[in-house]
Image (cartoon, rainbow, N blue to C red; front, top):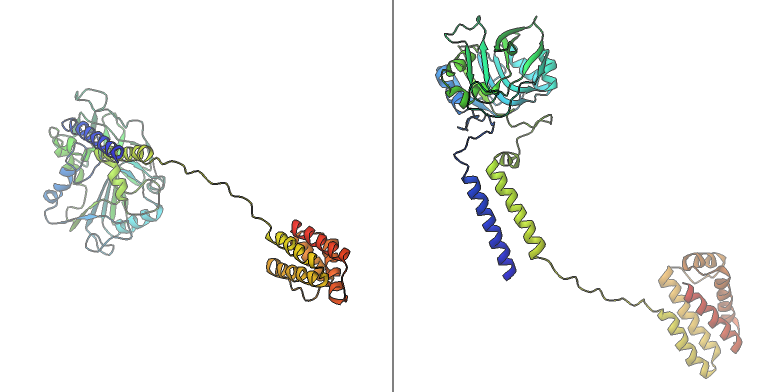
Length: 408
């Protein structure tokens, strides 16, 4: 009990130490890229989501958590037009069926804007594009002239802002179109090195807008200098008369290249660094406690003596008893009765007719040779029919039975 208390105390102290270490880093720059509308961290999208109501004052702002084809009617509808869907995610892992459902939605006169660093292979084939990921960028630099700086350039036309170049000293995290079908695509934005990152693709009465720099919607980017103007210009391509503007949360949680399913609560839990560290530390402490605190002694296994052949002992005892009285026929009868009961109970064989079939079957089941079994059967027949049995015949029957019991 004292040892268990010691282990529990040690585990709690370890958890407290981890909590202090995690808490001590609260004021450091949070580098996680979540793109979540609830997150106010640098690479969350809290500002982008909450500004939709100002850009679309006459539209209903909704949140979609379902796969295309399974939308709820109060979020998006397939049978109406003038709706816009925004998909801001790190990986747009759409299946071919989901792309077909999105195409059906867009062709009815709706718009879909996808801003993602990566597109699934099905999506790239569907939109006739090919992505290059050479300029993702990872470190965060405070110097705007440093290597990892995102610089964007809106095309004029269709845009005609006072400022058409935007940048910030954060992560690039963008890909660009190495190839696109110019017959069906229109370029809307490039990087300062002329890499294409924003395309418009018409589909029926609506349009797809494919954007590959999702951090342009991050809090950090929008709060840097005049970058909110980039956000306003980017979303101006959507239908200004939209009656519904839906913010998508399905693809931000959908695992890469797996069948459609709701996000796992454990997966979301593990994406939070502090929660993940606390969980792993607690599991490590539990494992140590189990290994050290609950160690038990191995109980000695007693030696089991092999079972004795009681049938053989019985025959010997009865044999000695009756042999002294010289009642040979009665003695043989007792040994025969015990033999037939033994055969019936151990091998489930009928002993009423000891013919050749009986001899073969008993020999096979018991492991005794057929000659021994046949000799026993012959002696049993003889003892039943003979008026008297001599000592030599009793001895021979006894020897045969003893041999049978030893081999069976």
